[in-house]
Image (cartoon, rainbow, N blue to C red; front, side):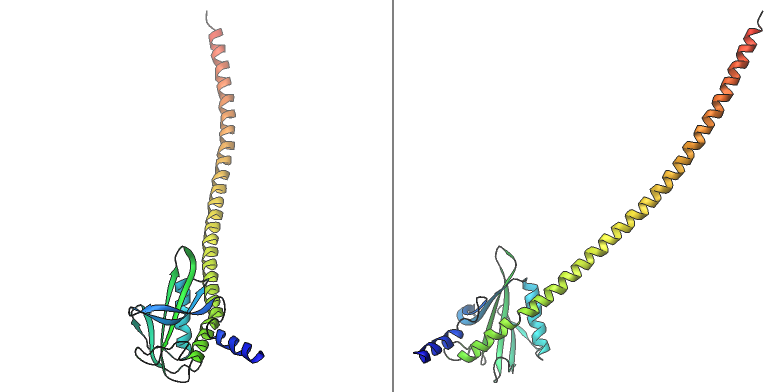
Length: 211
């Protein structure tokens, strides 16, 4: 009984690795193919760039576009299979879901000879594990993007702040000039008032001399 349960568990592990990554299908060349399907809480740009970067890190640079998929032909990627494979992947957005992606990954022995969980369950499982292992890379890339965006926001905020300081200093200088002008004007008013009163007195004196 225990042996039977273990076998069932092993078989199921080839179908579902986690709730995020599972074995499903995807249309390729108008035919439904077995694919490793993963949904991640990162934008398609982040996910695709991370996968390309990881494959490049593993020595796989040569690729081509094939019916909506990015295809790496004849690679020996021992993390997935000891034999040469053609690796296909594409990343789609999730409709009405911001910053979510669907990843489809297919493996072929060459040409249209695509692997599935019946003919090559071990490779399907290792392929699923590989896709799941990329999540920390998605997270790291997104973090760097967030840091860069935050640094940009800080630079803009600092620029605005420094501009406000400059404007404030200019306004303070204008205020000082205005206060000085007001003080000077008050003195001139007093002087003019004194002169005006003197002239009025003189006028009264002159008028008093009329005969």
